[in-house]
Length: 146
Image (cartoon, rainbow, N blue to C red; front, side):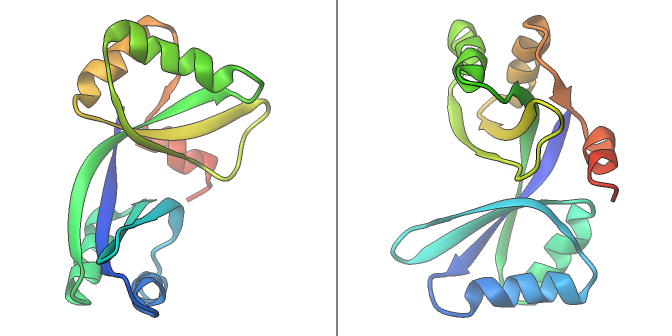
């Protein structure tokens, strides 16, 4: 139920992001979803790809620092209050959301969000207890025809 996410630490300068993306593209690695955050000294590129081990190796060979973390992909109704209802599941279970970001495509009336938790297993259990759909790798890659 958990996905592997790469967090790539990039120098905050022109070309650092495009260089990382070019390295992955040249190796045939397709990005499924990503987000970018920055600080004054560096940026953090968080991404999900099918072959995370290959992507990690490519990025590290280009000099990037890469950390692998576990995240959870969750279906959320694409309507007013859909996210608020989902967040209440975590609140009731006493689970803090460290960060989240969304996939850019949706299916039917459902969006897909990526969450990072301190304890992803506990979060998955709370989601399942609330009958919230957690998307595994197999289903995720099938949705994107990868």
